[in-house]
Length: 169
Image 1: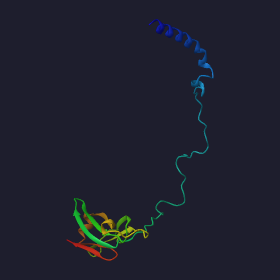
Image 2: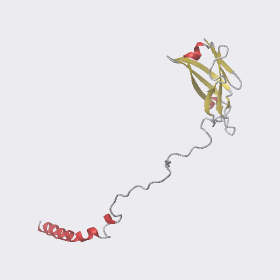
Image 3: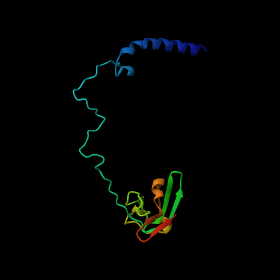
Image 4: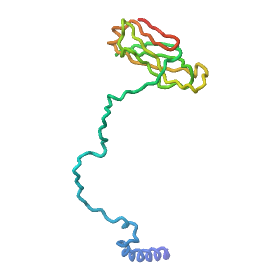
């Protein structure tokens, strides 16, 4: 116990002598100095540097180029009713494995023509992939159709490269 008290007394005396190092450059707490207030430099340009400058191309003018091609076969077509319309589910088999970005696209902007609502099942299909089993090439897509469009629709038709599926009311 005596040695513990002696070590504690000696270390407190040594540490109190280190108070002279508080303001010296040996103390890592003083390496960057204290902070101070500086007025903001005003510029004549009021532009926000975080907002990019406008370009001459507007977002509306940029058209997305979709490179999808028709899917080889349409295997299934289901129409499920909802409270706000219907969901058209389509399954198809692509010619090769690795098809992606599958879309159900309507040429008439989703409006029925003579009571027929026509869609094309398109996908981006790589040409350098193996053919594989039909299970590996199966793709699915769905699209919502509102009650307003369904009111004028008697038939829904989905077109592929080699066949088409039709469902009627």
